[in-house]
Image (cartoon, rainbow, N blue to C red; front, top):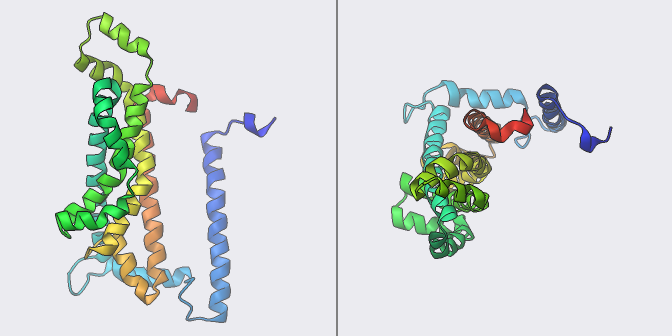
Length: 271
């Protein structure tokens, strides 16, 4: 059987997906062991024992100045900023995307504006956001919103605009108003695409969050990474990066689960 025709079960897919990760871990351990054998004080590729020792204080011991467990405080601060930014972006994409996709006059009026905002590099707007909103939480959340909301709006609007015109005509024939069309016909079909847009935006959202925290923050995962980099503390940076990857992966899995629960019809081919 040709590879293009093979179908992989969920269990086998999980096992096959774990193999490359294990190979990377083994490769890292080999390289780290070689470097530490040559130079026991090497900081570039720390061994797992060194990372555990470095993280123990951040995870289990209170900071003497702030009285907080820094690792958990960093995680909570970053997740709050990220969650708020994604929530605002999702609500914007749902509302604006539905209206742009369903109503041609609105699309003609504001479509070009949304496209123009979407092509602006969000990092270039960071100084403007800090000047406009200050160095507090608002600017960091605003960067996430500006970075991912236009893409999500365009994606949802494009999907809505491509829905079969026959559905709209049939609903109008049965007496549906524009509001009913939006809620009963368009919204259910847009939800899987909206969740997919959120999934695709998770990576950029983390980039914008880390960038904002690196420039102006006193707590957060990005702040901690850029704080310790001056000491070449890879024994802290690598666990923090791995933790961010785990959080992103868990969020992605939750979104997939929500999509399958809310719109199982859209995943018929995957079951």
